[in-house]
Length: 90
Picture 1 (cartoon, rainbow, N blue to C red):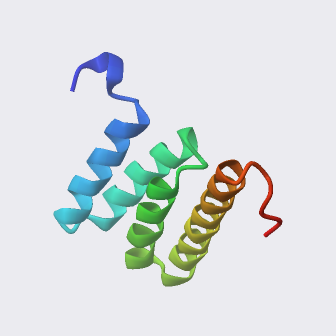
Picture 2 (cartoon, rainbow, N blue to C red):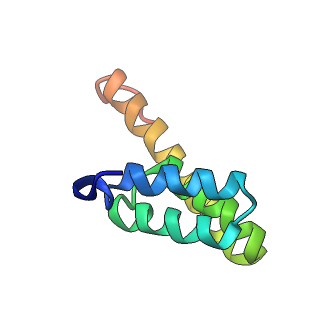
Picture 3 (tube, rainbow, N blue to C red):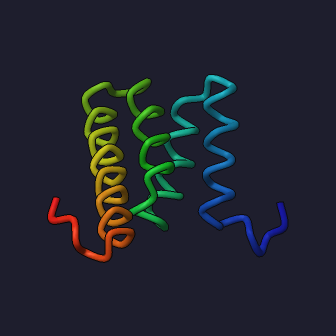
């Protein structure tokens, strides 16, 4: 990876996926953590961080999986509000 993009969140995310596939949970956690630090509202990063953390610490993993679920729900609600131009009160 070229040095100028080595610290990009997508690169950290890809490294995390690669590490998880190789069974390197702690390395995956570190990679996903870096991506999440840079993009804290990313559902996919938070979800993968939660999965990797669950392999190391089930309780901590559950916290991040819940956050991912909350981010997903927020994204759905925002999308719904924008698509209905605010007419759907839910």
